[in-house]
Image (cartoon, rainbow, N blue to C red):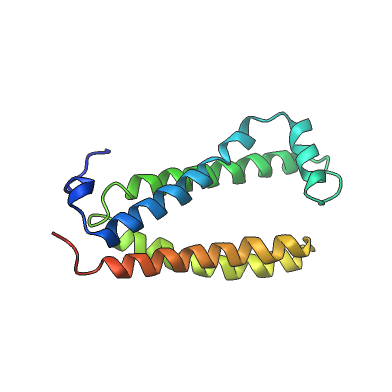
Length: 148
């Protein structure tokens, strides 16, 4: 499952090494969301208030969604870390995920605005996704023609 057909890191072109590290860093950051899955609800409620989102909803679906979304972020992070292990093999998937991230960023801006989230949230979440997707897309394009 985790074997690689790529040459050792030191033999790879610089553009591929940059893309590999970007995927690993972003994947690692996404994976940190796994911690929310194991927090007690009282801690999630405090984080919610600390973020300026007001009282945490008492309905069971709120805790479920907080943990579920965190688990999905963590799974996404693991996926990015995995595909970073073999850039040539996963080139098309990397391109696809970069484009999806850019589109997802735009969709998140609309969702965040419609949900009445704070301005700082609206200006960071959606644009952050879109920017990081664009960065991965550009780094992947810089790798073209560098396969061995």
